[in-house]
Length: 355
Ligand SMILES: *Cc1c(COP(=O)(O)O)cnc(C)c1O
Image 1: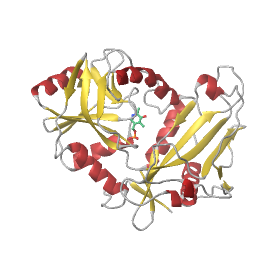
Image 2: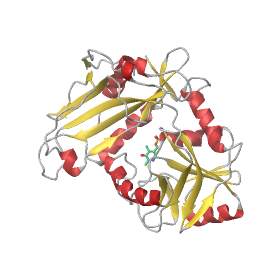
Image 3: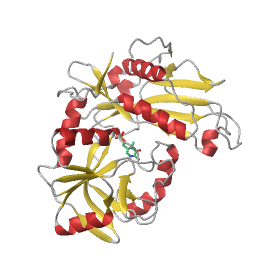
């Protein structure tokens, strides 16, 4: 995989912006590094990937991404260890997933070699932007958009695959309270819920604003047909701890198959945590909350790794969760981050060294 023959055009920025950045005061996804990767698709093929100075670019106003939403993305992180080595976490999963997302939106697949070679070249160029120390990382955002001009409703014949990078600190989102959805849906059977398609997020903003007005930060979506089963949150998969049993919904075409979720499941198995991957009903979670058996809820996703949920709302009632010393959330976060920062053995082969 590392014996790449892919050629990349590299055009370096004349000066770095890094001196203007306060790395102790970053808000997530606001500052971007000096370079970006751009690869155009035209005449039926992906052209030579280029790395160039980060900045705006022009598109025709009729570009299909603006009208028909052919856009997918990924989210991953690069970490630096004490020896200044740069690591990615399971990037193969993100590569596979962006092409799965693309396929569903009729976007041509991106070649593996381009993806890895271009990303590694970009990360090497931006190595100063990746700071050492727990919590620090470089958030990497690959995405694809349809750039062909013309408003006929058909898949575009031209695209841009791009990678941009944003330095990140430990993401502390404060207390997260979630509302269980009774009316709105995120995804439907046969739809695009499993894809990281841009439109999935646009569709969540309005219901999430309504939930915010009622004091919740996020929504936990339920199945679109009955609203009886819990699925996932806006950008996180969701786990429940009832007694000492860990529960999470199986992935399907409505639920995004999170890399963090998959990693939590592997760790739960390794550490003999009682785990059930099955449909989780709203009713059982409400009953468990009432009887005191519901010990934890947490979300899993690249940005926050593990995000504890402090309470939830359903049908006008609010429920608080206990604050545990020995939470599963803390356990998984500790195990995962130690692997990510090369501070623990990597039994599963999840780390990927950027050479
Ligand atoms: C990205 C995302 C997740 C989390 O996936 P990770 O691979 O763990 O980052 C979960 N749900 C949705 C809807 C997402 O977009």
